[in-house]
Image (cartoon, rainbow, N blue to C red; front, side, top):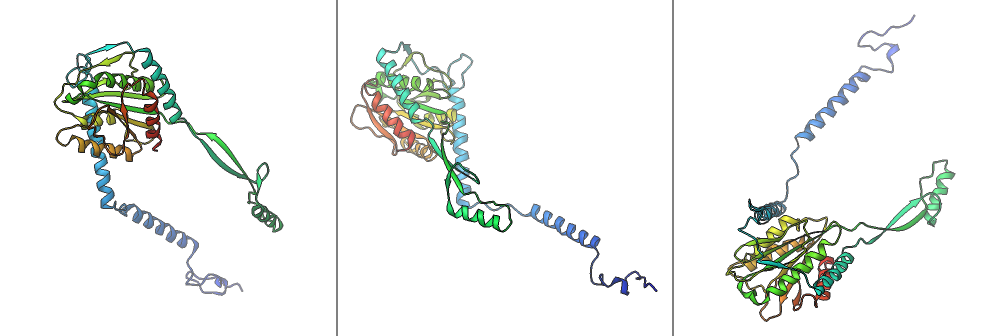
Length: 336
């Protein structure tokens, strides 16, 4: 006689499924329920708290970038007359560049191109077959795997190749002090600013912009435009909007954002009123920490006060000191 198990079972025919063993359907339902509960719990788990110090740094950086964007819109946005939005053009006139200035721009362009050229990076790869250098430990592991009847996964051959890493695009911001203490140096300042801007503009994918700063920061050359002529200006301002100039260039060229080769060039004696020097120091320190090189061109006179951390050279004849400018710019770009 065949013993038919009753529901809830226990007969001889249900010896493999006792009363305490859940059915496959029940097990699947239990597993699904547990998975849903785990997913809901994970979704409702709060994100890891940001340490107070990091949160403050992030807030300060966001504030600085917002300030830079506002300054860039003010300085570089043209008004209805097509002039800079800060009240008119910074230059009083223009002239043709001299032959020595053109030659200096070409030399500086070569130096900047070499300073930002992509480096050759070593890439190491492994493989199960030649070519490459044989590593005995990996070869023995592969032999052991084959002897055990397993599919070999060891890769005993290594090969190192070198490839050129693409150069990041170059961004150069130029800030020219036009306060009264720079009155005797407007010629060299204008010449140096043109050489720097022209050299940068001749490099593919590079961008440059120039501002003057006295009572306020004003645009001299705009991002994406190569200056064909040398802009001339006077230096009669009674104040120095140093922080406004740095903010405008930062906002226009993203000098504080990694991903490009960046250089801020300041042409000034550093004689500022109020807290302009301290405020500018705070901004250049922030830019340097983000990987932006800082180059300071000081007039040939005593009493210069450059910001800390900048590559400093004395500006005499800009065309004659182009080699020194190129060397200093190279060091600043490479962080040396």
